[in-house]
Amino acid sequence: MTSALQWVQAVQGITPAADVYCQTRDSAQARVEKFGIELQKVGWDQDRSALLAAITGELTGNCFDHNIGMWHDISGCWFEYTQEGTGLLVIVADRGQGVLESLKRVQPDLESHEKALALAFSRQLSGRAPEKRGNGLKFVLKSFNILPKVSFLFRSGDAALSVEGKVDVGSIEKYITEGEEIRGTYAEIHFLKMIQ
Amino acid sequence: MKLDVSKFGTTLLSRPAGREAFLAARAYAVPKESTEPIELDFSRVAVLTPSWADEFVTGLREEFGSGRITITEGNNLSVKMTFETLRESA
Image 1 (tube, rainbow over the protein chains, first blue to last red):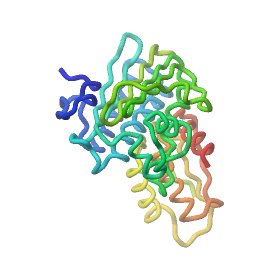
Image 2 (spheres, chains in turn purple, red):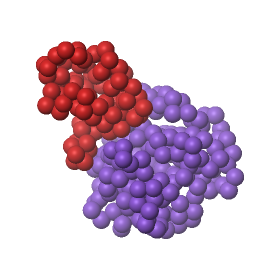
Image 3 (spheres, chains in turn purple, cyan):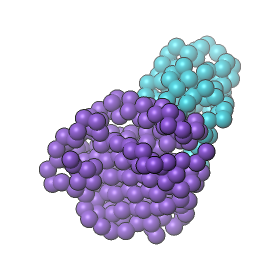
Image 4 (cartoon, rainbow over the protein chains, first blue to last red):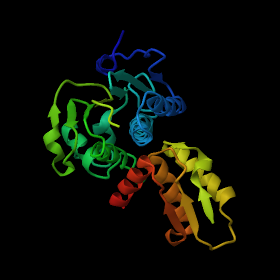
């Protein structure tokens, strides 16, 4: 079975399995709502369930906000979550244009995927300017300051941002490295332990 | 007047949904011939994102004036984090 990472690494996209594939924004929203409810059923408290659903909602929302009409081949997003003991793994991915191409529309001199990720996570900047957007990824990082035992990987192009726990947004570059190229974006969040 | 935001849904995630809620509130929920303050009460909302809140609150502020709009956040963590994020970016 294809993993989400293999899906965004593939030169030619294939339609993901139905249980992880959200072709439309509505289907993604429905799954995020279900995700929040299921978290509470397995013992996550209401506050953290709400915050995890909000984080996931921002990530899935970005897949559509920045890629409608710009997909490499397969539209929509990959969204899966897996209980890992008392922890949780969440993956959100898309085969869209990626952060660099999106931000180049408002900052044409942007040269690398690494710089694009640094901007996306540290400044209120959006490829959809002049619409006033660009808070979602900052919200995601900010949430990790109050959700302990979190590790977060976000990849776009050949850049990867990797953080564990609290983030020093003022020095965001130190979390970003160059790696293997993907098509679109790939986000992986490990909530290492359910804390009550 | 107080507007119970949970009437627009309790899981409020996307920008298009926030925009639609703003348009519905402008059309039906907020009296046109009035200058009374508008309290947006989020205390019964279960999940809120900055994307939804930005479309809804910014739309209402632009339509009716920032001075008329007040926000009651309640205790939900996603609501509090959302408004904290939006305040920092304002």
